[in-house]
Amino acid sequence: MYRIPQQIRFWLMALAMLACLAPCLFAAKAESFTGLVSDAMCGKKHMMEGDPAACLRACVQKGSKYALVVGDKVYTLDTDDKSTLATLDKLANKNATVKGQANGDEIQVSSVSPAK
Image (tube, rainbow, N blue to C red; front, side, top):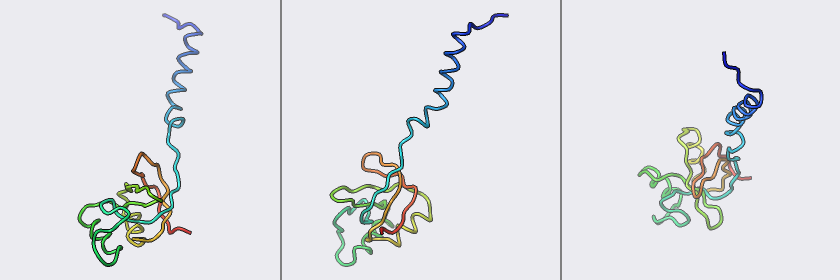
């Protein structure tokens, strides 16, 4: 029976441990963003005249995603969670704090709450 030398076993174990820890080491950290709840189609300026919250809801019903306006930046909010979507609907055109992972102009939402 062939026996693996101790030095090779050490490196194989080290490589296996690294493979197990890699997702933890490279996982993106959740961030917190505070801004105005909007929709991705309109962004900072709503196209329909009248109530901006009504415009936002109409755009979302037509397929637009919710968005968060933070200063001059508009982040598209990515979530399928019904509770989170209901909270975003309640906070239409109001300030909110969104927690999640940002990837460019999109936030993978983990939670939403009214801004304090």
